[in-house]
Image 1 (tube, one colour):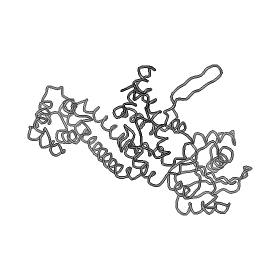
Image 2 (cartoon, helix red, strand yellow; image 1 turned 90 degrees about the horizontal axis):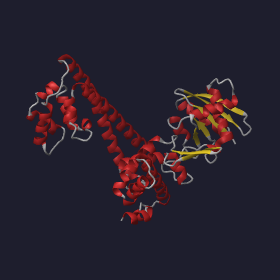
Image 3 (cartoon, one colour; image 1 turned 30 degrees about the vertical axis):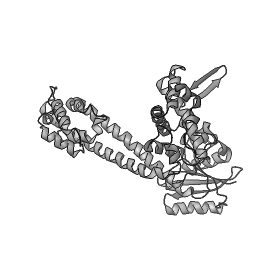
Length: 409
């Protein structure tokens, strides 16, 4: 067996090849371009790399063009965590000095000695990878939008509480088109107090509102003209300009989140596993796409449901030493899948009587806190999802919660 290790960098990469006995067979320094990739593939072919029997590769990243080139065909690519690679480095050197050629050799030896302890990158389809890109980007855009909205809200508290009071009846009012349009029209409370009903109605129409415009305009006008404390005119005008700058960032974040959400809605239903995922209560298109993005469509990726639950951080972990043992929640997990699981478990009881009964039983009989009960429900439904994906079966309420459903009825 020949093993390959690649120390990845932004512009250049170091490559090392070792055999079963740990002898260094070859090392190269390649560039991060098509010419460098060709040198790498030629080097692997020189030492027996074939389409049916490719040489496994260890690298410290799971993304990028280099990884995409290596993953073509049947090759197993192992993404080694940089922290784990640093621990392996101590086996070969006690000086704690880092070198790129030495790290490539360390990664090759990781596969030579402990390949069974590391998981290769999953063999997901191109469609699943595309959905993963869109779903993660949409999730990042949503988080970015909320972060900017929180900054804007904090700024408005300093000089413009009338706007926060006016938008309080709207869910996530600062991200709504009506709220952004009104803030653009009146960036300071002094300008907002001078707005007429006609101007407010026109702003609501520009934002796309179609119903209850007159009543809403009257309510907003009254909120803007209420008695509030004010900053000095110069400071208020400066804060208004700062607010407009933040508002521009929020506009871009809202547009990006909406555009990516539409792209997910167009792409996710095309996947064969989408039908199974959408059959589960609490999983819509956006949340279902996030779940698929993290678990992939390689059904051989996890040996059993317990592996998937541990990967998602849904199952507890038991640590024992001597006479002491503790059962705690997992902190090393896929954070994106764990976040999606919390939202899934939060929404599932609304569409599943069995899930609702399971949640209530964990709260009432076992005394779990809210987050703990949701994590337990996520753990159970994730196991059901694993079973349904293996056999391409749709979710069935009676099969998922047979006894609890009868008790709830």
